[in-house]
Image (cartoon, rainbow, N blue to C red; front, side):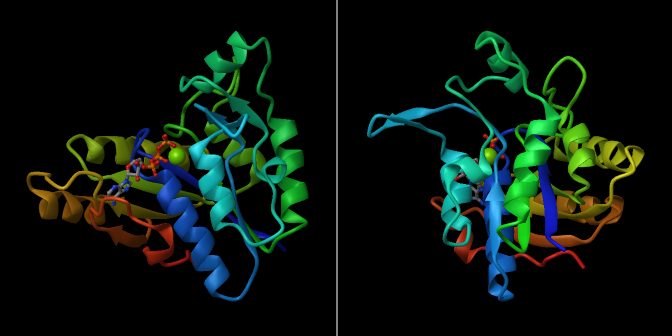
Length: 221
Ligand SMILES: Nc1ncnc2c1ncn2[C@@H]1O[C@H](COP(=O)(O)OP(=O)(O)OP(=O)(O)O)[C@@H](O)[C@H]1O
Ligand SMILES: [Mg+2]
């Protein structure tokens, strides 16, 4: 059976892509094949005449050989805005079944799939659904990336409450030092250890240009 995780975060720009890519590498280091999936991506740059998204490229880069963009991305929008708004502006709709189908196809190609959301856990996909509904539809345990900055404890606890309330396994969390300077960093980290009811899979130091290959994370049991 294909293994998998859903990587969410306390916010946008907290290191979800870094954590998701590092988890893909962690799976691959155990000797199995793995892929990162970024089903919904907003924000593109034109490179060699093609619209590219950094997160999709990062997931592709981390994935086992033979995986192509079409395997890992379903909805791609040019503007870096909320996905349901980007979809509405382009006259389309994001629907969960199309992502579940693409995920199933990818799961047929590799042993483990790590899915990255966008923004936080309750970011809407359309009028009815959020990323939480997508994680439920995919049946994936959740890994929370905590961007270590002021306010992160509240965001982490709100996310934990939602994950648990929706009946999803809370597989673990990762502390990511997104800024070099955070007052009372150690106390904040200790508070997260005390209040989050899932294992800490790793603590990532601040390191500009950090490469996911060098980030060592524990895989959830
Ligand atoms: N530990 C770190 N040290 C230094 N820079 C970091 C670290 N973690 C992440 N960054 C940088 O912070 C930025 C945001 O990281 P990343 O893209 O992984 O966040 P994200 O949560 O996936 O964002 P989004 O919501 O846009 O998907 C990137 O430029 C990344 O290189
Ligand atoms: Mg990202």
